[in-house]
Image 1 (cartoon, helix red, strand yellow):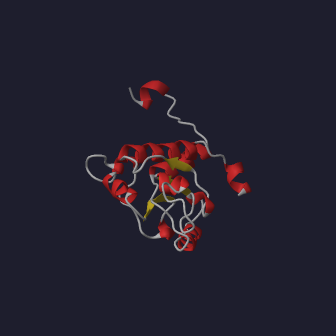
Image 2 (cartoon, one colour; image 1 turned 60 degrees about the horizontal axis):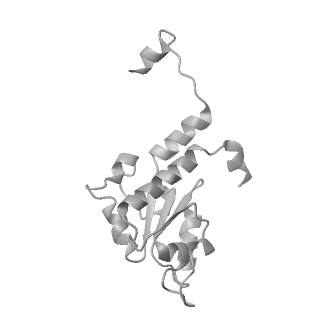
Image 3 (cartoon, rainbow, N blue to C red; image 1 turned 180 degrees about the vertical axis):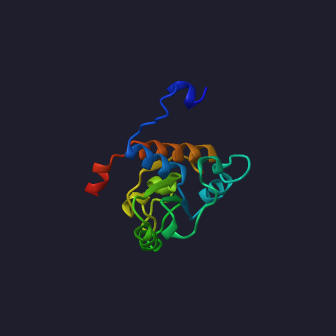
Length: 162
């Protein structure tokens, strides 16, 4: 059943500008890979033919922060890597979102020592935490869909406050 049959002969489709902008943001999201440990292997396999993140508009993962709007931090972040992560995050254009993939990125994992951040949210603001050690590609895809739902619900007035 198409739009023509639902609308009849009216020939008009109405929507809001927010809805169109949020729809375009979700369907053209470019992730920036930041793979630091074993979780990066699972992140790479989410791009493979078995899981195919291309169906969500993510054809390939960029290594350049200036073209990306979603950062996927996969693995443990050391104190030495924290400033690099923050610099890359600051180079991303607004609006931007972050997924912390794996237990190490979420809460430090089994590495409870002075050299590892106990969660990447100490360095950059995180929108979605994906649990697991390492999390399966399905979990990352669920995290991406959670970010999509968050983006679809954003309002212009909330973005202006940031």
